Amino acid sequence: YILLSGRYKIHRIEPIRLSLIPHSIIHHHTPLHSMKLESFAFLFFVVTNFLQDNNNSVNAMAQQQQPAQGLNGMDLIIDGWFHERGELWPGQAMSLQVKKVLHHGRSNFQDILVFESTNHGTVLVLDGVIQVTERDEFSYQEMLAHIPLFSHPNPTKVLVIGGGDGGILREIAKHPSVQEIVICEIDKGVIDISKRFLPTLAMGFEDERVTVHIMDGAKFMEEHLDSFDVIITDSSDPIGPASVLFETPFYNAMHKSLRDGGVVCTQGECIWLHLDLIAPLIASISQTYRLVEYAVTTIPTYPSGQIGFIIARKGGGDGSSKIPARKLTVEQEEGMQYYSAEVHEAAFVLPAFAKRAIFGGSGGGKADCAAGSKGKK
Image (tube, rainbow, N blue to C red; front, side, top):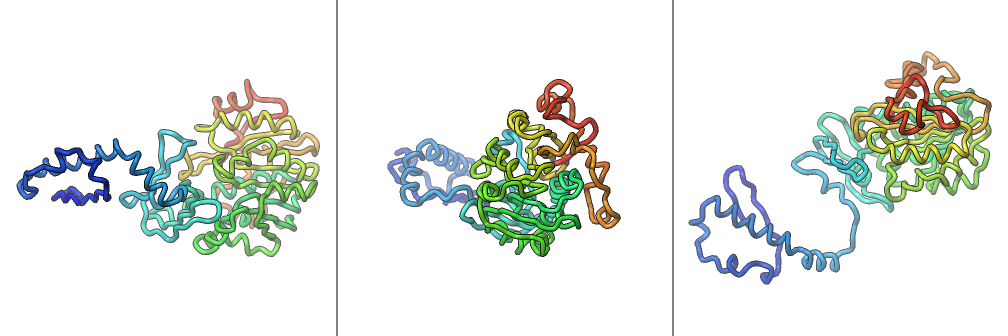
């Protein structure tokens, strides 16, 4: 150990092979009690930097002794703050102050961290990426659910892919016309944790119309063709297992599982970060769907404070999703915190740079950007 007084902390150097330490340091004859603070700091700097330069062999030995466990969410909590850093948003990070860690563990698919924050309520993190905070989750849940549901004149059967926290189910349940709600979540661990720590979202599982399938959504859709009026995909970012949800074959599977006139709505990443993902995907699926549109919403704790939705329609005439096909009831209006008819229309209004990048020129054709709204992730 090296102890530095005052504002300096106690630092621990892990056991190492002496052969890695320079001979001059090992045989330093100056009594430690007579060394100045600067000498301690310099000694610590020299040793740690030398070890960093020579850690390949040490790391190799450690890897032989214990198998890789993947990302550890607890490693992202430093000095009482959780730090979200991701390869899909290089050069930037999101930090939330942690009041108390409520759960940390690993399911069969991913690292799961739940903590109570100082200002954002309970936070759910999967593989190091913020999925839900109680403070702003409603903007995402409401927009992802109600844009497609209110774009359909009479949705009766709805499929949710992902969405294990239950928030999308909670929003779908606000539509009395819906008779059957099916959810396919591949990771049961997310459902169990959400029921334990996020009851205001997981209440969606309590609706009697809900049927839960713990399985691959793509496989489920292969077995249920021409079955649903609306399909909503509430997925994490396109890294690892979720990457297939951002590829053309998955959208083709959704198209086959939709009834004629049906609507698909998926998490569509961020216009500030992911235009290189969004534009080619929309161009590709526009060969299959009658109309593909894009909307956005604001949510402070998602990368860049914004997220988008891809909305695609199968057959059903020449209607667009830009204008709600039905009016909200008084009860529905009172139950919303973010969504409204005005926000629905505004969600499709994109800034010029995004509209050009996604749809080209001024927009038009099978893939089209609305001329008057805005939205979320």
